[in-house]
Image 1 (cartoon, rainbow, N blue to C red):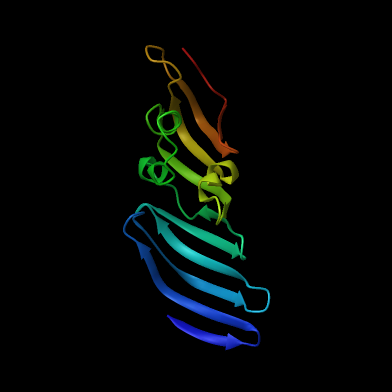
Image 2: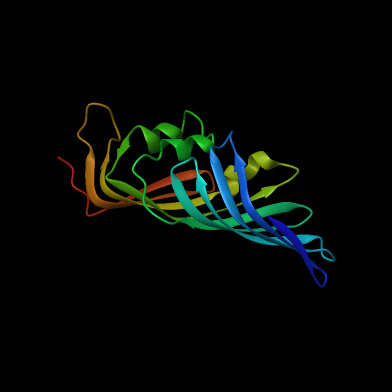
Length: 168
């Protein structure tokens, strides 16, 4: 890690930042504009010990915004879903009723206002591509199967869009 000055900017190189609570770690760089009291950053990390991702951040005195994408597919998404504490009304729809050979995070973005961090669920936007999908909408019924499904979480709503689905 290191800190250097570039004009009115303060540049911080981060070799490793980690969170045991979120089972995550990253390395990257922050560029702080000391006049505007804002920053931008770029990170490579591992989320929930299983998902490698690239993440870009911007922050000012009111909020932190981020955008990123996964670097490779994962098989088990439960540890990732648990991080966002979506609750019992939503989590089972992603974790328990969905099976797949792999899940790729195409996009994740959101904004966290410092005065209301819990509102992240209203700004969180995640898009995942699910391969070899089996999705159970109701107990006792056969699952809907699709070679690929787009799963999108946007403004607190989960959207599941199977491509070429079959149902028996």
